[in-house]
Image (cartoon, rainbow, N blue to C red; front, side, top):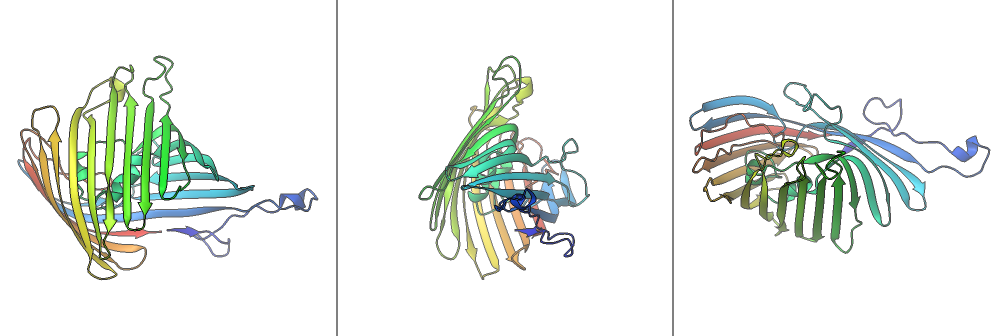
Length: 359
C-alpha cells in the first residue's frame, strides 16, 4: 500500500533507508540489523450533490469521500532478539484545495513511536482510537461516504493525544488493544484522561469486533463515551455486515464540561461482487435518541465501486437520511465534510462520484 524508497538513483517515491553494519564501523565482525522507512498515502476526491430540507441544493467538490486524504511515513528497525522499533507519522490534507486538514498540526492524524516483539506492541504518542479502525469493518461503506449511517450519526473521537497503547499479537484469531490518553492536568489529576479498549476476532470469513472509549471531563465529574460493536461475514460473493453504536458524544465538550446526548444506532448492510472489479452494496440504518425526546433518524443507502487497479478505485453513493422531532443529522464523508445540514427534523439526499488512489 506504500511505495518503498529503494535507492537515491531511483528517485522520489521509492527509497529504502538501510543502516549499515555498526560492527564494521567499530572494527567488530557483527552487523547491525536493517531498518526501513515507507512513504504511503491516500488521494481521494469526489463530486457531490446534496439537497436538504430548508436549505436547498449544493454542488461541491470535496476531498476524502471513501477515505480521508493523507501522506504518511512508517518505519521499523529490527533490534535483534525478536524486538523491533516502530514509528508512524501521518498528515491529513484536503485534496480539493491542497490545504491542511488541521492547520494547527503537521501530523494531525498520527505521531507515535513504539517497540514490538513476541508479546505484542507498545506505542506512545498521538494514535487512532480502536473504534476509528473498527467502524470501517462494520458496514458495506467502509465506515465512510454519504452512505455510511454509522459514520453520519456517531460523534466519536477518532484519535487522541498523549496516548500509551498496547496491541496484542494475534492469538488464534483474537486480538486486543488497550490505551490510556493523558490529560496532563495538575488538578484534577484524571481530568481529560481518556481510556480505550478494543477486541477483535477474525477466522476465515467471519469478523467480530467491539471497542469502547471514555474521556473524562476537565473537572473529572462526567465522562464522554463511545462504543462500537458488530461484525461481517463473507458469503463468497460478497459480505453481510451488522453494526452498532452507542455514545453520548453528540454535543459533548470535555474541555468545558458540557455533557452530551446519548444515541444508539443500528446498521445492516451487504454487498455483492458483480465481477472481480465491480461491487454493489446497500444498507439501512436507524438511530434512537435515548433522552426520550425521540429525535431519531433513519437512512437508506447505495454504493457502487469499481477497481481500475489494485490501487485506484472509482466509487459512487446515494443516501437518503430522514430526521424526526428536531434531529439534524446530515451526510458526511471520511473527512468528515458536512456541506448541507437540514433544518430540524428535515431530510437530506446526497449523491457522490469519486476516485480514490492509494500510494
